Amino acid sequence: MSTTVSAVTSRYEQVLVGALRARARRGGLTAEAVVLGQGRLQAPSGWPAGLPRRSNDGACFPNAWRIALRSDRLAYVEGFVIEADGTVARHAWCADEHGRALDPTWQDGRALAYAGVGMATGWVAAVQWRTCTRTRFPGVLDPAVQHARDADRVLTYGVPVEALLPLGRRLPDRVPHRPPKTASADLVA
Image (cartoon, rainbow, N blue to C red):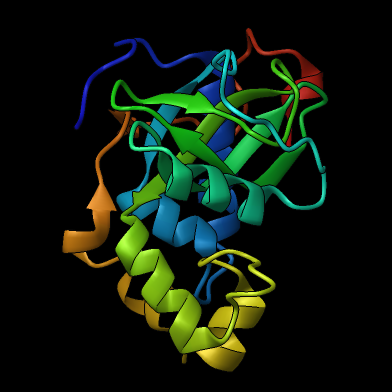
């Protein structure tokens, strides 16, 4: 299910990965470290006609989860995005077999780059049962869920190999920790 969208890493993707590396260097068990270790880049894509869209800004995790459950063409992805104003945010979206990010929550164009971990729906459902988060799903990589209810399992060991969906392009090996000189100041996270 892995296909390349583009061989070139955009400056937005470079800034996003650089921000994740800076955050992960602070130490501790973090979602950023999981995404850096197992994540992939997905190119932003317009929302497909005919699929329902839930534009509830505060509910990206349940929105993406519901869409992934109902679609045999889309997978659940959790990770980080960089917005047009330079904000790096934890987020969830869907991805297709070509590694394109399809965001059921945010309007097209709000996120300029996506870096996340594609997860098998059966495994995500098992995490929800284990952590008692089925009714209020804050995401698999949520620090509060991991620390309080899952004994830091995912933050320590990552997503199990059998639950990983390799959607998108591998993260670049060398990404500057600071934005490249060609990037504008508004991209700094």
